[in-house]
Image 1 (cartoon, one colour):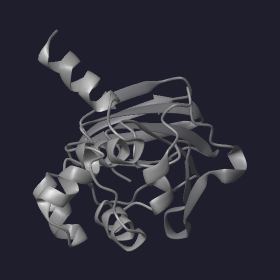
Image 2: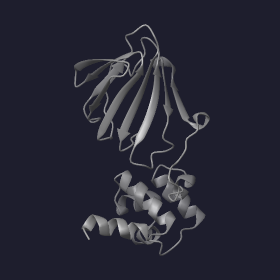
Image 3: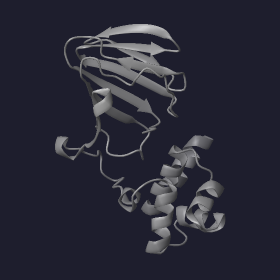
Length: 194
């Protein structure tokens, strides 16, 4: 059995709450010490929670969730379920009126390894003139409708409906809908960073 297979087998035996906390911590690239400091608990206590040796109080659980920038509910995700459904009406929506854009989060939370955002960008809208970066390793942009101009490290790309591009999210980038119609775009990020 390889080391990776042993780690997966070991994780499968953990208490579901502890396993979810460990998965969220690893996804967010936090060490035990960092999360313990953020949560106001000792590193050894947090390790025991992750391994299912001890159970935290509600107050402590709330602090651990806050240290992960998550809700308590996200710590009880149903990992046994073969899939997690996000209904259209339950999507988290962020409006950017000044940028003439709206993001709808298709994936339910940042607790997984993948984040999918559907953006609706009105003509003239986009991310603004200043390029930005974020903590995802890789990003795939898929234009569903309309067109999108994308600049990655000042290199321009013009994408039409059906086109896609993959790039590092850590390289400065920005986008704009220079067309005359509304653009719909999927942004697929790994790991999640929004």
